[in-house]
Amino acid sequence: MRYWHPFTEEALDQIRKDNINALVILPLYPQFSISTSGSSLRILQEQFAKNTQHYGPDKMVHTVVPSWYDRPGYVKAMADLIKKELDSFTPAELAEAGDAKCARHVLFSAHGVPASYIEAGDPYQRQIRECVDKISAALPGVSEGVQVHLSYQSRVGPIEWLRPYTDDVLPQLGQQGVKNLVVVPISFVSEHIETLEEIDIEYRELAVESGIENWRRCPALNTDKTFIADMADMVAEALSQPSQTVTEACIANNCGDVEQFDQRLGFTGVQGVGAEADLRVAGRLHDKERINGRVAIFGLLATILIELTTGQSLTDILGISFN
Image (cartoon, rainbow, N blue to C red):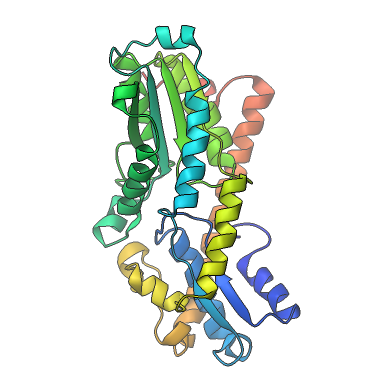
């Protein structure tokens, strides 16, 4: 994993101990971004370049599946979970709907990224939109009383991130009279802090304060059978298709020169070979990045502990209001 055990380096050590000499590299991010899949692939690129005696082309072959947001199996699995939540609204709840046209609304909440990433060529926003369009096509439409929305969550810092922000959209939906809402964590395939705390606690509280009375949250895919079967098919298909190296995947997704994204070093040569001096500097940067990630995780865990202990949200304790 990127910020917790087993780290990429630990997994590679185990792979080497198991005498594995061929890899299918499959990031668990449906949509590609320099900050997610790209970051993980750079770590692999770094390790391959620094340890050519273990991971050189004559020692280990690999291929990358950079993104898979448009796979029919993934789209179906997501649509099935959402339909189940849509069907859970009772006749009484549907009768409460303040929207004359649509009694049920779906809000896809994707993890945000800085807008500068998109301006520099990161394909993430385009892939999110295409993904939402494909899933929405498998759902009931406006004519059947369902309206779809898209927003972005988890922004940090003062810079501009992808809009609209989830914490802006929820009050807007409340003002429009929306009463029945299904929130879908579209860029997350498993439950974690940003679904269990940010969506389930913070955003739900904001939604209720905004007048959205009947809240549903679509679960992440986790071990959904359709999803797992599609993942297995994806690996099998990757073995029979032309290979794509980590470097080729980064170049194809506009993250070959990562300095224009987030001021980290890029890499040269096939699989990073030939950039050992740069990689030593990059290694120190990645160590700092890992520490920052751990601090962020511990901060979120501390927030949950405070809220569980006091019975109040951190925003209430600090006197912060969304109104």
